[in-house]
Length: 197
Image (cartoon, rainbow, N blue to C red):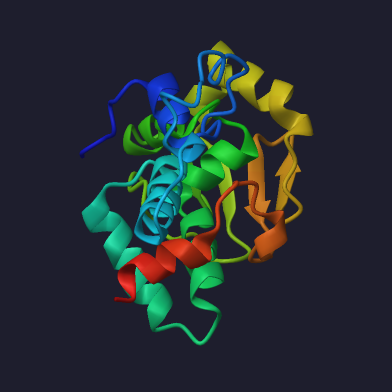
């Protein structure tokens, strides 16, 4: 399984937005080392927004293009359909529920088989989680101090489309998210325009 391994803070500075939510990520950001701080062409703006979405969800180009193609065939607004599909990936929901403190950590938990969907072990990070599915931690990992502390400390990190059960170490996707509820700073319209040429 391929993973993005570039320096995280450097990526945040280059894109001009704190992708990982770390308090120190943008400390060294300047106009010189941030692409968003410079005057960009229309193509440059489209490319930047596309790169932001890929970075938020930890995707490579080939994976991302598949999501864009699927969104373009949707009856919904293309940009919204794209973000909804990405938001419902298993690795992202594991992160949103609070089992992991980053997408990278969430992906590792999933690929190592520590996450159950409706009681069944799923080890595919890109698995599209259906509405009303319960995502839970495997019994063995409920004694893992790092995961437990993540889950309990991040209980204030709430998403209105996810219902958490702190006692049962689980979260439920109660509905698809609305665009304004998805906590990422991007203009997805530009990203779609990039592929619409």
